[in-house]
Length: 311
Image 1: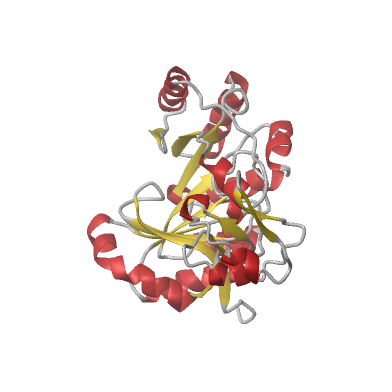
Image 2: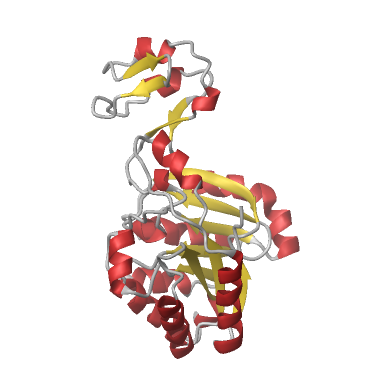
């Protein structure tokens, strides 16, 4: 781990998270992901490079950003307010530094392990009393495997347990090394779609590596009990009878025991727009369909099931 970077881009540290693992947690959202999920609820964290994001509701219309932009990439429109020409913008962040109202700001901040844990340690009492800790998420943590491994080790030295949240698309050895660490108590593992064609269409990559890495974790007695599957669900995309049945049979085959169902929400649409892009909108499965899936996993596959993230 000698070549691990001293800092990484962190999108945010979210305190008092209650759906990112057991207990009260602080979730560390790292920037950069190898998947391009069309429904991503944190699209500003996909690109591994720094980006400029707008918060239009914060804008006071002073026009100072227009004056100070070195590239002439910022203009003001009576209809749209601040308009950024992303082809001209080189993300120098001069406009963000000068924006008093924080209507323009960097997506992420370079943070060291000590800076991350100094924030996380503020709530250590809550972790100890609730069985919580920190959750390292993304983006995708396997893009920062060496840094995350060191972060986990240092958290352990400070008496903090860790949950890792991964899409599973990355180096198997690095994933297993993280998973085996004593203070890693939980692994949240994404299942976008067990169907290869659907997975490629909606995430941009094959699911083969993801399934192989999941098999690896489930086959090891030291890590299988740490696993909880996380399934984002889009109506008509990955909630079909065929996909749910095949997924359940796969879980039974490899010995998965817990699953979280995450019905779609459209909170990523405005975030994508604010970093300069557009995102497709999907539909959430009906309550009836969610209940059917929940009952199937509980009764037919004998899993512990939770439905999270309803908005």
